[in-house]
Image (cartoon, rainbow, N blue to C red; front, side, top):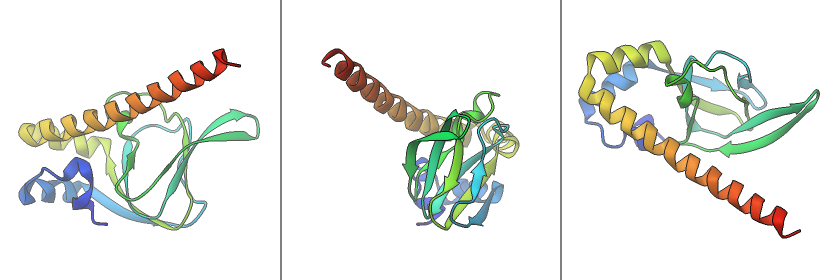
Length: 150
């Protein structure tokens, strides 16, 4: 998968995408490598190019629960671009992976200097977030229904 194939960038022109490419850096990580830890500052967004990652939430001293497994084309850390809340979970590579990283500072500079591009990107990110929220709502609804049917 190429960065251009990622859903949030699919409607960008070649010129607009080049501006994204200029503010992104690709990193390669090994299996079990931590990409970001719960509690860390939320100053980067990550886009999976290859491999897989797992999002884990600390529940007790030495226990964590898996919240999601993400594959190429998916992203994480984007919420931190809209608030200053530390990371809510730890992300660990399940396999060796290639990930594009965009720093919040660079992203904000880009959308301020290119408002039309910024609007496209923000709408794409909000759409992605809305889909995740709807999925979480469905899971909560199902869990609640199961509790009442015990």
